[in-house]
Length: 228
Image 1 (cartoon, helix red, strand yellow):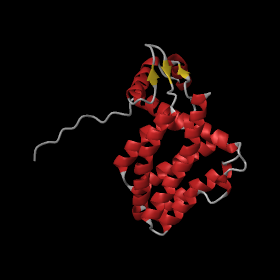
Image 2 (cartoon, rainbow, N blue to C red; image 1 turned 60 degrees about the horizontal axis):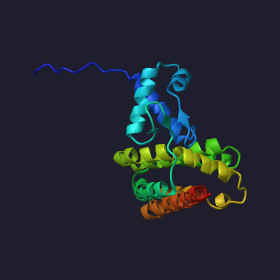
Image 3 (cartoon, helix red, strand yellow; image 1 turned 90 degrees about the vertical axis):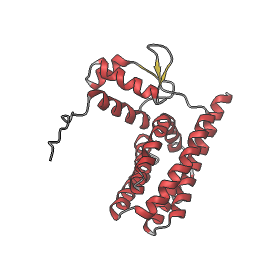
């Protein structure tokens, strides 16, 4: 049997670590729509040199998660209502398919994880919009994990990166509305029940209704901004 030869396994490069940190920061809404990012400031905050930050930023620019307006002007994109409608349409179909698959493939551990996340989300819904936004994202990604559709999850993730800053503002505004319908049965609860009962269509419709509900408020808010 011939000797097998492999290249040495390399540790995760610094630029990938910086890229993942920035990607998570965008999804979490740590940056505001339209905010200008300064490479030197990010490098200093992360304790790294400018080079891996620049590499990470240009990767995010190539993925349309950031905008390069001039050679040195990097900005967080400002979503238009039309762009958000397009993203919501894609998420509607893909995350709906993931929920249906999760109802067929989710393990007891998957459901337990989702239930724990949802408990925390409802606990902080009106007091900590930053945590609520992060937990909402965690629920949606845990649901995609439960679907076992890894390609679908990788396809959806860039849309969350792009929408993160806007979703964060949505949760801030939502927290101020004490009379909103979060007081009613949360759609995530319907998804959980559908997973327990192995009802793919119910799970699909529930997560799609969740997306439509949140999308409606975000699109409405963006349209009002565009008209003002």
